[in-house]
Length: 237
Image (cartoon, rainbow, N blue to C red; front, side):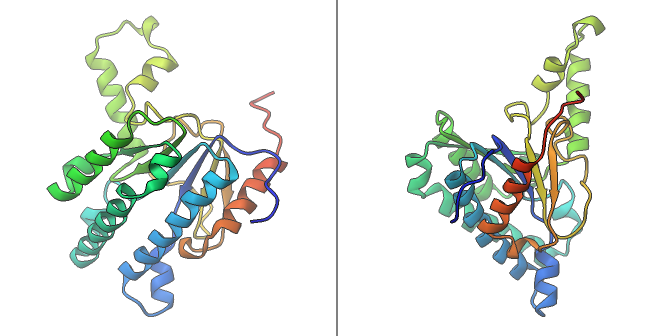
């Protein structure tokens, strides 16, 4: 990899759009795109650490993805999840780089028992690591996250004057996640989806790539970070 960009974001989010379109353009079944995307994801996880990114978040699926997609595709997606996360659990890099892995969303309500068990084991294995942070958002919606946070705050019976930004943050599913410096969406569509991490992306820089996710490689990530490093973050000043 060529020279490192001058300013490295602490927390990078990638919304990996375009797996299915990548497969369709090649006459392949949709899950072949997810398989290609899984390989890209492994490359980007390693590349982000090499570049100095301390926290990386990846949106694996929305809250409705598994419910609304054809049964065969959903089954294949669950298979890919199991294979990829089993490989992650056995990776020596988790220990070497002290990577704290988090799975955020309603996957406990949607995933079969063997996959849930695997994800819980990874979380338990890495819970005390603090070298890097790797977040997977699975069966996740930012709108759902905010709604459940508001309900949780209401159930706490707090006085209005006692409710602060910190109060809301504590009640989010994503309460452990740091503010997002750079959000990258692949696939050519310049928009966000389902209120993804709306609290943590309040001051994020956004980069939209025309590349479908399987084609978004480590050099693409470096280019996005270079774009970030060229921008001035004013925070309303």
